[in-house]
Image 1 (cartoon, rainbow, N blue to C red):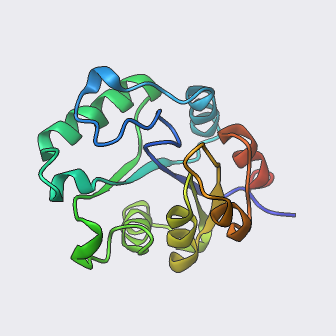
Image 2: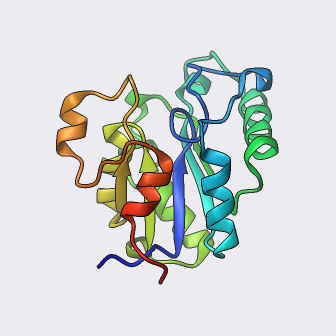
Length: 174
């Protein structure tokens, strides 16, 4: 039987908030259905939660750091405080170590939380989220949306229809 992770890391857009491509407007931030309750449940169990997000709109000149920070603040207002935030401002061609599917953001979040990647789960809505978890040595769970490709679903070791089910797949409390 799986043991619940010591921390749960989550993708932002399409996982905990409705995906609005290159969103720099906090007024457009809407929580995914059920996300608030799931996050509150994890917090009530004493499980740290964090957000890891690729924001290539910064590299592309479509967003500023300040706009992303404002959107992230709105996410916290809607969904409660997060123990760790990691954001990659690079574009796909930049070759950085942080942009998912690279494991950099997961590794950095684990370092900040004082945990080994094998002790955490990362939940996201696309294949690069699951690939980042695998590369870091964390447990990855895919929660598909309309933009998730079938081959990403087929390749994911754990797939859940929603965030609550994803947490359920992770097992009983440690």
